[in-house]
Length: 220
Image 1 (cartoon, rainbow, N blue to C red):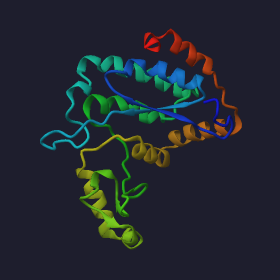
Image 2: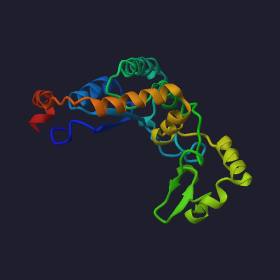
Image 3: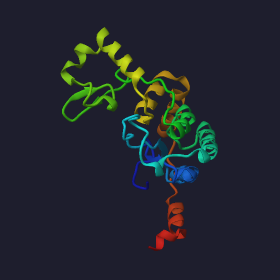
Image 4: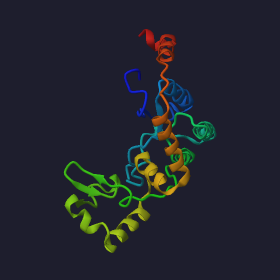
């Protein structure tokens, strides 16, 4: 944090949200802010079910949220949304944060997926898929992309596959769609970028040192 430029720099701290750490999210965001970082809060994507019922939300029961934690989870996210709207150090859009508890609790969140239109997944071998869900299943060589992209057959196939997909909630896909299609999400990102360009990052690493010195783990 001390070595990064204090202007024109948007450092982020990615945090994967699980049942083990969701109560600490406000504290994580606060600490990241003290270090001049923005927080990116990513709902955990679990391994597939054994029967392939759901590609993104399945096994690892110890990492699934139960119904008992639902109310507390939503309360914490409401706090984070309020902080975001006040200009707090969170990179996620308000819409993404509003819908994250749905995904964590139910394995599904509504968002305008634009796979194959606003974003693609490109493999190291140069194979292009609408997103990672179709890698190895429905791909094309990158040299064929321009020839197929605007064809009716391609568009129909993309729409059909999206309609049949059980859905994920990865910010790299969802936030791009929200940014392009929702005025509020775009406005929030413009505000973040503007503050990065116009303002100076305030870095308080002394708070981190105090936290480490006061934690039991620091003595190990």
